[in-house]
Image 1 (tube, one colour):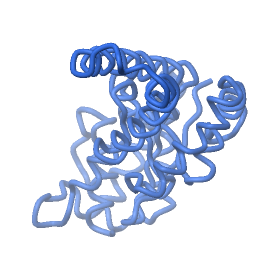
Image 2 (cartoon, one colour; image 1 turned 180 degrees about the vertical axis):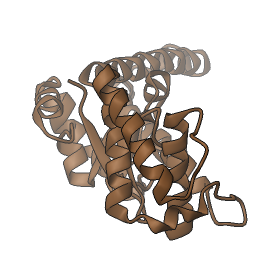
Image 3 (cartoon, rainbow, N blue to C red; image 1 turned 30 degrees about the horizontal axis):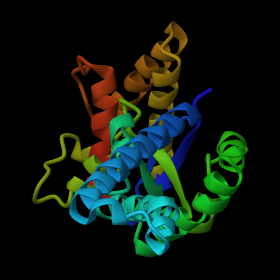
Length: 249
């Protein structure tokens, strides 16, 4: 079963995201390693062209054969995750990203901690520790994630809810006009119920959950003074969530 996590943003908006699966994280890691190997090979070719056969002698041999790949591994992860919003090239290919549990993009300290803990999660244990922790912890966190208070999510939220980017882009009433301003009659518990109903329908799109969506729409219409039944019940409920967020945050 796909695990999910709720992330509360600095605007006190709670968004549910699917956590990246173990398979997706492994494939992203393998892609990153392949990119690093290719990059290292090209670097060696360039250096040999410049310095000739004297490149791999003495100290240079040790630096290029052992230290350069390790340093490149750490720098690659740190620089890409900080400059590319929590995504290395492998993660970007798999459509996953690193996020802090408060919804923010990882900062320098976070990505450095994650990279350093690869020494235990990946290198020293041949990946066993990292794989076991991602598989068994509730938030799919390896040691690096636990230390940095991060995890890895899929870049899309439930198709009936909102992506983090969608919420943050609704900056104020100046940039978004609520469709149902009367949604302020409802409270936070009501909106959580609506969100959960949409999530259940998305996860289990059967007749029973469809009936819940229909009954919920029927119940909300008189409360919000809506006389014409919305043509698309799912879009209606999603719009209510969006309007509530803008009007109350």
